[in-house]
Image (cartoon, rainbow, N blue to C red; front, side, top):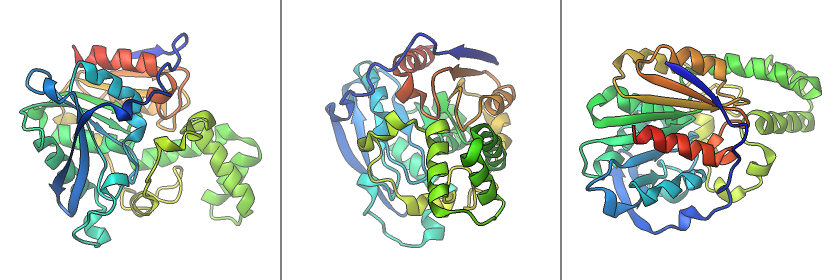
Length: 312
């Protein structure tokens, strides 16, 4: 396992591109619980290049913020999809049973159906944040079907994430840090002070303000799914992912793995360094100028590293 620290002289060059408008094949895939929207870029390359499947975060998020990565579709097929309940997959349920719909296992089955729609033997997977859970689970369950595994700022263990969040709240410090600490401890807090502190935590460790203002990157986020599976805030896990531990799957991985995060990421570098050391043939890249989405903050360098890894 190697650790690479990057990002001093590269900054985003395509954050404000319009790659989502690139031509591609749009279609729906039947999945457990309903159907999901997919878009395949570079369809003509499927017969000779391994498709890259992008798995967005959340739970309840959307794929639009992967826009910069779509620039790589000039040389390889890239498939994006909206998980059931999100944006273009929002209204296609066959059941309203939350316990059936909003579970890690159902979302994994959904990913399996999406991959099968490509009619190929092998794929590359890139999972971001919560999407990292699904990418890890799929690679462990179907190791012979994944050529490269990319875990970008991934959730690996929910309890470790919660512990890391407490450390980040200490780093935030000041009035904001104290308000969030009081909130976690169940103490009464002023509502406006809490909203301000929560927003500042988000800007510091998730998406900075200049990215968050681009609302078109995050349309159709389903907060009902997010709260049911995770909780009301990034730093407080109360949903059905509360006891999730993906580290138990490490021994099943045989796929070359690229793990990455930002220096100021809520998916903390020290934690991911510990995990990367336990995965055979894994490499960790830390982006020095990024938070939770290096592909949005250090796009050029992120794409360069991603393409080099996928070509290896």
